[in-house]
Image (cartoon, rainbow, N blue to C red):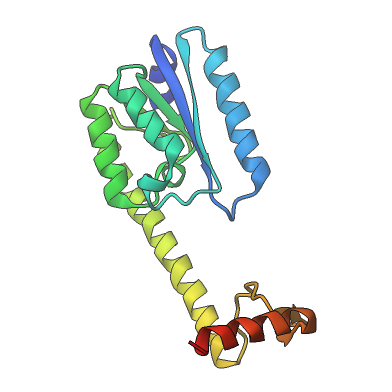
Amino acid sequence: MVLEGLRNMAKRVAAYCRVSKVDLLHSFDTQVKYYSERIQENPNWEFAGIYSDEAISGTRISLREGFKQLLADCDEGKIDLILTKSVSRFARNTLDTLKTTRYLRSKGVEVYFEEQNISTFSPEGELMLTIIAAIAQEEVVSTSENIKWARRKGFKKGDPQVHFRVFGYEWKEGVLTIVPEQAEAVRVSIRGRFSD
């Protein structure tokens, strides 16, 4: 079993945790606590840290500061093994997932995905990772398309879907209505802009 092999080797071990905006906030705290305890309880492992990104999408690495710091520390040779909950926590983009895990493997850093029981050092790891990463990416695309569809339907019905704040107006029962105290300031501003 992959996990047994990981337990018996002396390694500098870190964990990567991520939750998106739609995940429950306690999920983030639970992941951090779980990995902190898990790594420190293993006598063969040296705790190399918990890296995390909270309320950040997994679709773009450039926005994930915790993930970028994890990669930088791997570059500096501080980490041998990264534990993470699942492929979708690591990245939601197939190309990013494969490029990153291949790069880490070239640096001698193994990544272990717990839910899928996949190690990037196992012979079948890359094949399984490719399949699961593609599924995770497709879930993101599908969710995005569903949200866009719902918004288009709402717009057609006259429901703006997004209740953004507009100075001079407020939302009352789903309708944008004028706030009299602010309306005069808007009128003055508009008159000044167009009188030049």
